[in-house]
Amino acid sequence: MPWLLFVFAFAALAMAFSVASVALLLVCLLVALVLALAGVMQLLARRVESRSGDIAMMVDPVELARMREQAEARRRAAATSPGEAAFDERS
Image (tube, rainbow, N blue to C red; front, top):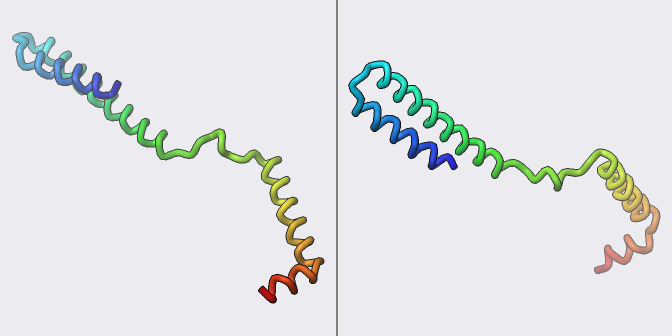
């Protein structure tokens, strides 16, 4: 879609060179400027959207707290079982 806006902006610019009226020249130049800016803004919006993370992959605070509790429970379990730690040291 932004490339279509650039094509229309170029067409408005070409039309501005072919008109005889100053008022129509200013309107064509203004239309060309607005269309070119809209195309650039759409290209930038696409780039930002492609670089931003997927909102569906974000972890909500409740899930994050549950994951932290599980990690803490694993750490406590690993600290309280010396047999497994001794086995890990031998290998």
